[in-house]
Image (cartoon, rainbow, N blue to C red; front, top):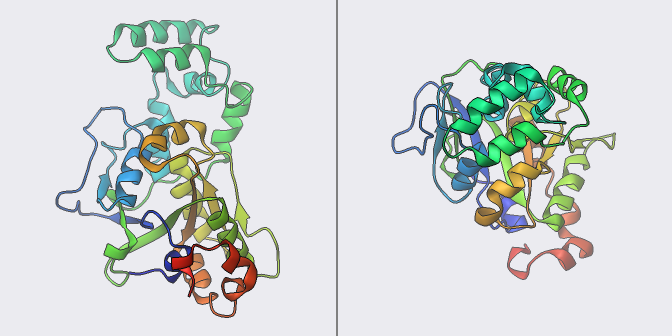
Length: 276
């Protein structure tokens, strides 16, 4: 499956397709069961041509399990959801339960960075109440499939595979073009969102939720500081994600002809080899 938008934008990385499946592809990159890892590591691998697979036992981290659509995995966070409320905000050092859990984390090997964040908090939200509200407002879902698969869009057969979202990795000029194109044939101006969310949530459950709407919106991601840190070496510094549920992808692909892509402003911004 090819994308004309990707060709016009002259993307550095391949568009990443996210699929639901009851079968795990052969030779797919997977995380080890019970081992922490960031979903965005595998997303970056898919953008470079590999296939990655995730299951309810191998989603890497608690937020990743939520982001991919394996239910509310925050309940499995060390100390439960309450400790996660403090982890994302002000830290667990002032909580009796949090300190006890923190001692257990400190005794495990290779957890220095996590221990510091657990005790001091990532400070992404002001306090535990804000974190609790954040989780309550997430479109948490448990998908009707055994696996979530990520692979290059060009390797997808839309007729035989359950394609759910398409994500482009873009620089600021390319992101601007996608925002304009998403609004091109709409009679409203808020057809792209930049939510506060984990990097994996912006390519998973948030566009899943948009797919259920009459007029689905695009979702800009990699505003998650932790995700940006995770993929900086593999993807570079000036990159964002732009995710579309399948209906919006087709809408945008069908709106290329007659659009700004063939006018002077975009031609001045586009790389020479990307001009049609």
